[in-house]
Amino acid sequence: MRRAIASGHLSGDGDFTRACHAYLERSLGIPAALLTTSCTHALEMAAILLNIAPGDEVIVSSFTFVSTANAFVLRGARPVFADIRPDTLNLDESRLESLVTPRTRAILAMHYAGVGCEMDSILKIAGNRGVVVVEDNAHGLFGRYKGKYLGTFGCLATQSFHETKNFSCGEGGALLINDPRYTERAEVIREKGTYRTRFFRGEVNKYTWVDVGSSYLPSDLLAAFLLAQLEARDQIQARRKRLWERYAEGLLDWADDRGVRLPFVPGDREQPFHLFYLILPSRESRQGLIAHLKERGILAVFHYLPLHLSEMGRSFGALPGDCPVTEDVSDRLLRLPFFNDLTEEEQARVMDAIREFPGLSAGGQRRT
Ligand SMILES: *Cc1c(COP(=O)(O)O)cnc(C)c1O
Image (tube, rainbow, N blue to C red; front, side, top):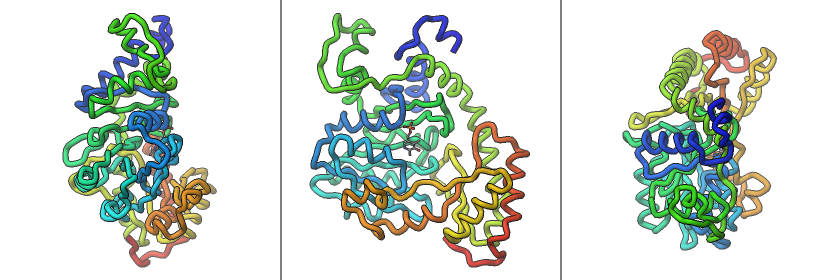
């Protein structure tokens, strides 16, 4: 960051931004990556690039962050909410076919906890029906499905570098472009609808207004912060792996005894250790454990509220009961403290506090 300041180039697309692009392109093996001001903005860029317009539909899991749907709603699309699989908590591909209509333009695949969606099936259904797949890979940077990096399956994919993610610059994101036909227009949309990016590369001698667009590029100062984190990838990921495995091993017997489910990672997927969750037997026990931990100074939080039950979701005609697995899991899921500098002592304290929770009886019914 000191070097960025000394260089005098604090606006977007300086040396550090270019280094982040190169890092992402090289490590994921993709044609182009563009840093953005957030994952939300990368999703908005995707919706513009796909020419999403009023009357279009996009299929999105109900168990995701609002931006996955909102970016497309902003262009006038109607979100069609899909339920999730009870094991990975990802889009349930077995119901996907029935949600596709002649108006469907895109399927949004969000890889929950960085555990990949059923990409083979999703891509097949999308291909058969002439629909594109966009990955919201906010959780999944460096995760893999059958050996291939998440974020490299859809025509476009998005990353988040928000402070809650594995790699962060406070607020930031990236658009990953897997279909190079989108690259030139993505550069234009990101630079206020102009050829500014090509102008700075010396490819054109002026830049004028050629398309819709906005200002989606972050300051080079933030890119410098992010680059340092990306360069520490091995260290950060090794730490997160160790913390994740300590939770999984340390809580296995307790969870088994009390009907609590731990995260599930299919054998053909590599996860990037983004979060660690418990699925409690009931909403009451989940709320009880939150309160129990809070009394001990430990912050554990639930996660997404079903989008189809939200005020906005309902305005698109969604009804309670439309996505029963989402509704059930959303009530019972609890995320444990999990961040890059969580110490093993702190983690041990979290696990001790969980084991002391009196609200679940041992030998209880196992729930999946
Ligand atoms: C964090 C997150 C986002 C939004 O990221 P921002 O960078 O804050 O815009 C979008 N989708 C998912 C699944 C996320 O977890």
